[in-house]
Image (cartoon, rainbow over all chains, first blue to last red; front, side):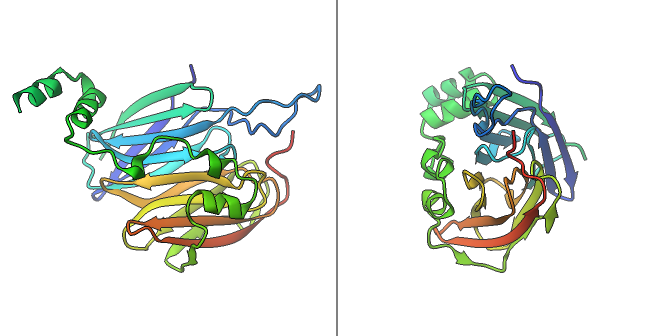
Length: 104
Length: 157
């Protein structure tokens, strides 16, 4: 199981700024280890974000997103206290879900 | 109607409720929310194939699509890229880099108040044109690009 995400969701006016840090190697499949063997690709492929029970963002990612990905999004009409739920799934089927509340 | 209510009541937590609502036909999943990873686009090895893979082969240049990225990236492993679309009814944004072994990096769909504005961090193997693509609700594609010079590549091993 991967390490928890760090989610920060802060309200500015009626716009929630959501920043997510995911803990993931994001191996490209292009690198070789010391003995010359290719390190297999291992990367997050799908991301979803829900705010207050509604899906607001769905993303797909490839190998060229940096290790330990950081994403930032903005969602209009959110309220303080709304729950932000972030999911990711990687190419090996590992997944993780973390939650945070929007702060004023 | 009573059956639907019962199904909804039985759902535990928001995902359960959502699944039940979808099953009951209250919310119709649309194509924009397709779950399948776009393998053809993400595994495309050159820019034109990747653009074709996301349906954006004929994307038009737009000044209303803003791409913020450094002129020079000292570390190609972590290159911050911000994209903001001022094009009305933008429903998706994708980010690509032409010189990467696999150009398509990420693509996001927006709904329910999500603004067409994203920040991501990319790996760039070498100096590249970073490209953003926006898709509007009427199926049109717009693009903007910026060259980022890389002094140390992000794919070395």
